[in-house]
Structures are given as structure tokens and as C-alpha cells.
Length: 364
Image 1 (tube, rainbow, N blue to C red):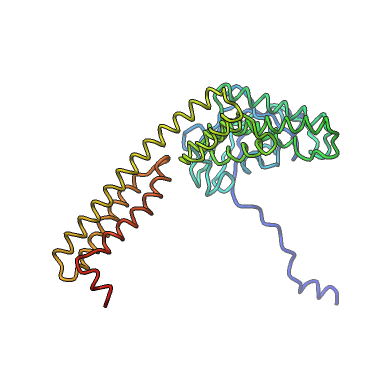
Image 2 (image 1 turned 60 degrees about the horizontal axis):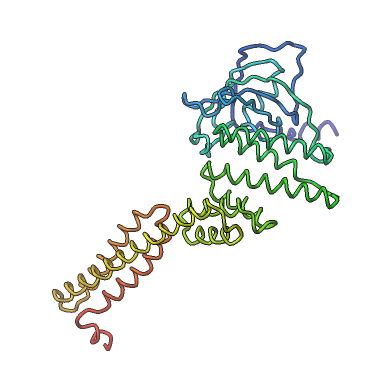
């Protein structure tokens, strides 16, 4: 009876592998006795990554190997799985399709488009068994965080903002899960976090990640409201986003806490010049809108028995000007363009609302 029931039961579901394909072709084999990594190990590798013939990652040219933990999402999945099948000393050519790479998102910072296949020339140089974060003591975490920071600073100074940003982010991991600290150790961690956030803000600005930079600056200012670097980098981020008023406010806060900050004063002067330019531009725009809408409404009222077509023509002309101005808004002009839309819409409505017989139309 039990056998019959077992035979009628559906087979247990099998775990389907995640989508995506990858291939590994050995270039230089390793010694068969060489160690192989397991998930969680920190691997030191040289990686040259290409996409459609264009190099997007080259640790050899950068002069700094990658040191990342395996199986923790630090590599694209196809490369991560390929490394897990290598031994120290092995060099291989790895092909990764889109589903095992960056998929439909691509990687904007590296210039990899969506649905792109990737090729890697990867060499596994060394591996280190690294405990999980919760198994590391305070001293080990601080040492590893400092090591990552030093690697990031060296990369940043050589112009490799992306690699530096990744190193700073790796360093932040070690500053987490700090429990039961004394006052002195807690202060050390706080100082290290401030330094890390400021470094991340600097690299984020280089990479065009202004909103991320603002988050890092906010984290610093939450514990040190007078921090000059945080205020300055926040002002830079707001300026790059075209948020003129916020950029001005950030500069003002910087100079209030640090009156002699030369770079802050220069940025404040530049923002002020830009603000004055946009104010003049806005005034000219308003004058054009009122003139165009009013003239078209008057012309239309003279040519129509009831003035309705003239009103419509006046609105149409005004909105054409609005659209033309808004389509040209970029960066700094976005906020002014939005304000102008509201003001110009009101102008168009007022001009079109005053045809010759508008009073009699209102009374009917």
C-alpha cells in the first residue's frame, strides 16, 4: 500500500538553476594541488573585462588587483561562479551572457549597456579565508576598514573614481555591527564613518551620482553640523543637479561655519552669478509670454464675432512659447523653467480671458 501511494505521488520539485549562461576556458592551468576558493573567501584577482570589444574594467592597467569576497555579489554572477571553479595560479577566459551579467539594467557607471554579453580575462592570484563580520573583533574590523580606505585613496589619486568608490563601500562594511563599544572605541568608529562617508561623497560626485553624494553628506552633517567638506560637497551636488536655491543655502551654511573657506566662497560667487543670469532670463521670458498672449488675444478678438477663437489662439501662442522654453531647460534652468510654466500659464489665461465682449459673455 505504501509503495502504491509512493508511486502515485508526484516527484519532488527540483531546484531550477538561475537564468544565465557562462563558459570558462583555461588559458594558464594551475597546479592541481593549489587551493580553490569557497564562498566567503577574499580572492585577489586580476580582471580585464570587455563588452563588444570595449574595455570597461582593467585591473592590470590600473595597477591594483581586485580583492573582493566570493559569493557575496561583488562580481557579476557568471564571473563569481567561474572563479569558484578556479584554483590559485589559474588564468582563464570567461564568457558571460546578459542574464548572468548585469541583465536588463546594464552598468551605467562602467558604460555597459542593457542585455550585454561580457568577456573576462581573469587570473586568480591568491585567496584569504575571511571570517564573517560578526566573527571579527573590533581591532580586526578597524584594521580592514583602514586598509580598504587606503586602497581607495590610492585609486582616487590615480584618477580611478569607480574603483575607489567600490573600495570605500567595502570599507564601510567593516564599520557595521559594532556593538557594546566603550566611549573611546565608539568615538573612533564615528570618526572612521565620517571619513568614509566624505570619501564616498567625493567619488560619487566624480561618477555623477549626485543624489548618493547628498546622502553621504547628510550622514556626516547629522553628527557634525559644521563639517566643511560635507557642506561643500553637498553644495557641489546641488549645483550639479541644478537646484540653485539649495546650492546657495549649502554655500551659506558652509561659510557661516567656516568663514575663510576659499573654495566655498568661489562656489558661492559662481552660484550667485548663475542665479542672477537666470533671474534676468526669467524676466525676459515673462515679458515675451505676456506680450505674445496679449497681442494674439487682441488680434483674435478683432477678427471673430464672439472673440472665442481669438482667446483660443492667444492661449495656443502662449503655450507654444512655454513649450519652446521648457524644451530647452537643462540642469540649472529646470527650476526656473518650472516656475515660468506656472507664471506663463496664468498670463496666457488672463490674456485669453479678456476678449472684446468678455463682459457680456460673463453676464449671460
